[in-house]
Image (cartoon, rainbow, N blue to C red; front, side, top):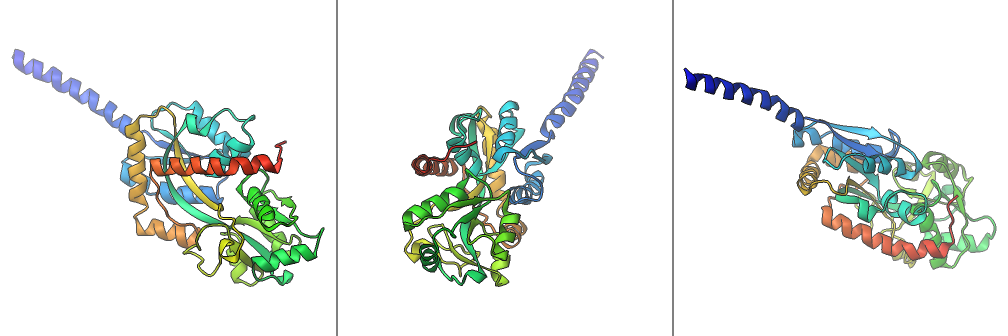
Length: 323
């Protein structure tokens, strides 16, 4: 009888601990995105996030907290516990350009306060011109700028980001005067580009390629070292004799510093597994026009540090001062 009662007590205790363990394992993981629903970063995030629950065995939710170039999302992740349940997904513009341009206005240092998990998409940044401009390539555009002083400018979806500083770098390399015309996002910029209201624009190519293929604008080059496999007909600026090759955009995931390494590695492996799924590759490459490229935590850290080293002197030399 005593033995039976002891076994009964142990069984009851075990029954009470199982639900608690299961509850801990099934708490939702939150991916905080600092950009609005429907935008490029949100769409890329959801293409990956939709498949993560099946790999991790946990619910995964995308939490959009748009504002200030992704800074609001970074602040929220920084304020959350470092327990592996909250991650930030952002384009490289947030940890790189926000830190270099707005370092006096932000609460964090991306190299000290966040840990890279993995990057999972890369995409070229390119320049488009209106079809009515009669320009077919980068060299012809530079000649047009030289012949039309006072008329030339380039549109960019905001100031203080990679698009804007690519234009600065292009103008310096080509020896031309090319002022910036900032827009509140890509859609109004592409609309003005199609209408000929701005003579050029630098941006991601997801919004411009449809207009390029329709013959309404001409994408004259991409700022990457090699042509994109998604648009192999578009030449690089480098192969046209203009050595500006720092225009790769990418999207990645970060955890708060102090997050257990096992949790970071678990998410890193899950992302790698999701990117092998044909349906995910198809959504990213065919619908969103980005390359599903996986980089692990170490590779992502090295890439970010190289970007900071490359862009810091260019931004300083530009004299740009945030408002």
